[in-house]
Amino acid sequence: MGYRKQFALLSGGDHSFVATHHAVEQGGVDEVIHIRTGIGVKECEEFVRDVCASQKFRWPLRVIEPPALGYEDLVLKYGFPGPGMHYLFYRMLKERAIRVLVREAKTRRLDEIALYSGVHQQESARRMGFVAPRVKVGSQIWLADLFNYNAIDFADYKRRYSLPTSPVKAKLGFSGECLCGAFAQPNEIVKLETFFPDVANRIHELQRKAKAAGKHCVWGTRPVKQKPLSQYDLPFMPMCSSCPSRAS
Image 1 (cartoon, rainbow, N blue to C red):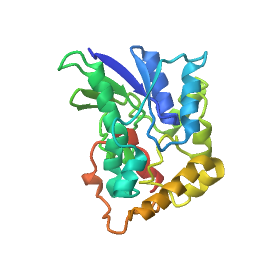
Image 2 (spheres, one colour):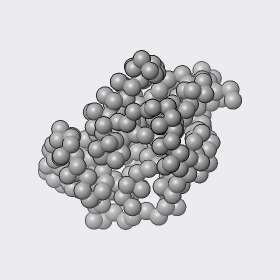
Image 3 (spheres, rainbow, N blue to C red):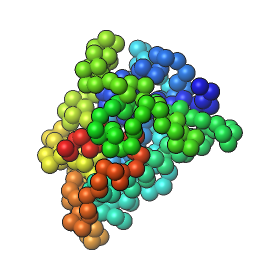
């Protein structure tokens, strides 16, 4: 394929790590991309930076951020999100950052930009709209080369290439790159308080601010008036494909 640029998206979780390694090994990846959502565990980004800078990998890394409102701004405007508001937070914290990345990478109107993802074929991935190994969204070409992998396949790949596990993933069970709370498990805040008190304290402080602003102020819960969305209502959210499985 004649892609203008090729980016591998690395959240810090096992699946994105395996997919990034696979994409780099196949050749053609220009940069590894990590999104600083503004509500992640800082040790997650540190792990990504350390891995990419290591002698073993030496991957060119770029950390990008939302170009407009940050997480705190969104919470104080809309309250903490439940599943029904997940797309709004996804769009503001991740999708817009990718749009800027793609726009800056293009030199011609019809240029296509490849984005390698660790999405694999599972129910939560289908619920986020990723139903094929290749999905075209305008100039964005989302590629899931390991779409048919299952958990055993990912684990085998990690062992084969001796890929490290993020300490955040080991403690929380997910990357920790984004803690918007839309699909948080009931005990998730307790885990954060135990293992990553800095980010837990930030969430608690933001809860106080949201309460003072008259917004939904309990992180990780669905607002009372917010109706749950059907899986058929969910838009394309490839960078959050595993989120629903955490709350199922």
